[in-house]
Length: 212
Image 1 (spheres, rainbow, N blue to C red):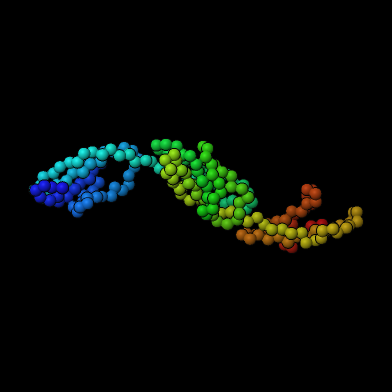
Image 2 (cartoon, rainbow, N blue to C red; image 1 turned 90 degrees about the horizontal axis):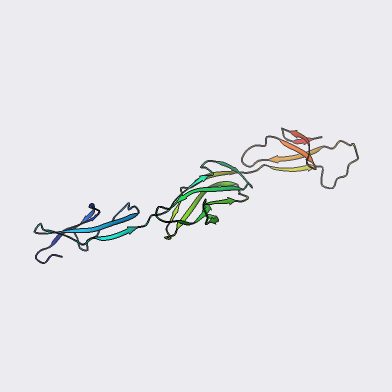
């Protein structure tokens, strides 16, 4: 206010650094790009006579947000359907502690870890392309979401024995033709290996896949 004139401008400062100027009451400004720490904030009013006055200083504190990065797996990494993958992070808080990290794939919650180092096992992963993110929450209730890590989870090939059929009976020393069909949803089948009770019989590299 001004008792014998008008206020023409109010300049707002923190630590002698100009934040902004407003010429219309109520006098406000937006302080963008703040960083954590303690700051002295004050205002200087200038009137129509060119006179100025400085307000009392207000000491304010700005809380720091946590910082988090997914370090494994890495963006573009190829994973395999059905595998178990450990998601690892590097996380810190500039003025407190991190109390929890939530892990997501495409905004679907995988789980939460509250102990450092903040990791989680993504179990029996589905096939597809996914964006992995981690959200760190600190003791002040502030949270930060990591930059997404994009991964590709490839399908496993599909294989079915078509001959012999389950329950077929054969005579000792008889040669048995084993046949199978195989396919891959996101690639090609390189070969098919055949086994009985865990014992290797042979390999076929071309369809139709079979072995004696």
